[in-house]
Amino acid sequence: MIGFLRSGGLFPLTRDAWQLLLRCWKYFPLVAPLQLALPEFYPAGKTSYPSIFNVPGKPGWIFMELFSPLTLLYTIYTNPERTGELPKTHVWLTTLYCIHYLYRALLSPIRNPSMGPMNIGMVCAGVSFNIINGSAIGGWLGGYGSAADVPGWQISIGSAMFILGLWGNMYHEEILREIRRDKSFDKDAEKEGRVVTSNERVYKIPEGGLFKWVWNPHYFSEWIEWSGFAIAGGGFANFLPATLFVANELATMLPRAIQQKRWYGEKFNKDVLPYRKAAIPGII
Image (tube, rainbow, N blue to C red):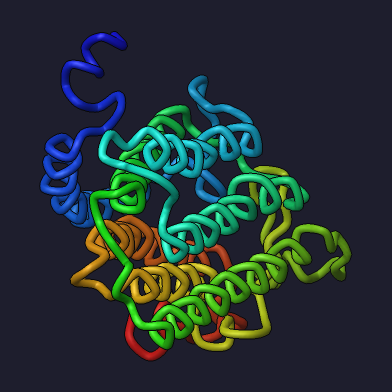
């Protein structure tokens, strides 16, 4: 197997293999219509359901997400064309990427009071996404792309967007965690449709921050975060792998956000349900 990967230019990732990967990666948004066509199928989190193919949510999530930073670092440091030290801007972008996944792959699931089970198919799909994405961005940072001529002001603006988006993601996820931690509610709340229990977990209507306008502000914050990352790397045209990451996140997360909005509408009493968009304030 290793011999096959080496002969195909994947282990380590050669420039030709990387360019082919990018050409194929552009077509990932085609999954969006498929997800929209299967609105009830997302066997993870609050929409998970019993199955012999389920794995516990926390270890499944950690295993899946760790592939992204590990693949990125491996691809950078085994780049066949890399000579000498990485440019400082590339080191900075690598640091931002790893900070995000330190939170997403480790701190976030560890801090969660509970996580719904995940179907093993979802875990495998996530692993595949993270390996491809880590390879695409890692190849660029490792030497197949360059941010050497990006002006300092652009790096600063993009980095500020990244940090703001990461903070927004953390802030809104913490609101959801507080709901899971708080088991207290009056006896009539569930009868009146103000509280929902599912998979032995308690759900309430989240309030605060951007939840005033959308049901999934943590998704919206993450899109801001990775848009800033692309800008810090020279912009959407220059930093193509980061641009594809933003597009591919939208393709898979926006249908999920629409599904989440529908879930709230089905589970909670319509009289207490506030009007909110799915993920992007004022748009969708």
